[in-house]
Image 1: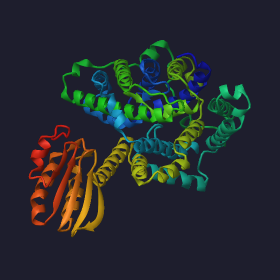
Image 2: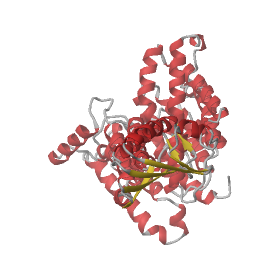
Image 3: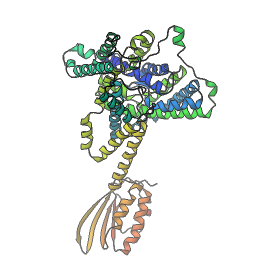
Image 4: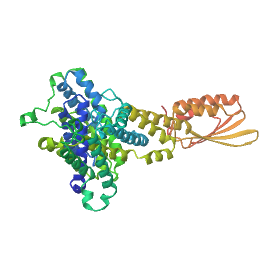
Length: 533
């Protein structure tokens, strides 16, 4: 875990700067206390990071759960009641891990996972544009198309464009954002090649330091000074008692309320699904191709959610924004995730006032780079070149994430992916080879695939019905290991019709050759290697 500290410490600092505003913004979007987002980020880093088998995944509060949390707090009658559902949801997740439900993550098509990464990259860029110009009032971390402030992604961008054209954007926020993006580009493309120092000290760290210096130096400048709304806003306790007072504790007297259990199962299912998807996506991004044990990940996430709920934190999942920032910053082991959790803990205790000097526009510049690396234009070309079977699910996933939200986008992409599979299954159930006409009969050879299911009924029935009279059909099932009973019934019906149409059937199987079988049903019952429903 500590072998790659020279890589993990700089990466953890970058992840810390990315995670800090997201923890606060997601808490605000969820209608929860701001400190609850920080609690979830700290536990996601320290506890989940330690227990997880992922070397580069980073966990914390997730934007995808914000709407669920907001609704649940109102439904259950308060935040303390909601925390009971978080604890129970964590226990259910631990149960998922024990039952080895993590295998579900392996069944999402690669095209959907790549679409998810690209969609998140695009939505990060689109959502950060208003912050870049010091304009947006929507909570940081709200990645859904429909925003909590009544706007949506497109109307927010139009408002930003109008403000830029009319000159009503924040000059100070924009200038320091441009300086930050210049630092990031220069650092990432030029300076990093100049020596060890530039590899260890990451560009985002320098950009944030420059942002703090800019804020301090321009305080008295009416044109360039930054308003409090354009800065990170960490709660600042004035005493130890005030700090402790920020923690909330679950009200277990509502544990018998059925609605609490419904919310708990919802949190467990959604958090587990988001985590498994992010695990799959993070493993694809990992340049060292580590494979995360998914069942262990569910156990780690469940444990994190139990602890988070017990001390007033939001639900936790593995998060692709933080994980991708970790990978792009050179993180090599789980130490980077754990250290970022400690940085959150130490900073909110010791230096909250310093954190509140960080301009949000600088962090927007950092996230621009993260988003661009997830959604490079070259990836669209690559997916297009792979053919429509990959490009269509990929595109649907991207559009769904950008114009609805993460889970809907993935669901749409998965649905389209399944339809593509069914189409190809329909087409590939058999191979038809037509030979020359001899002895007054058309000779046609039909070879069945290894697996033939009821999805293939239409294609096979169409081929059989289109056979002309006086045909010699050679039906080869030697490679077939699974033949659905629906297909056997179709063949059995065809055997009867074939006699009327003067069609001779030659059935070739591992057991030998049968000319004009009277009953396909009886034949396949005697052939144990072909399974039947």
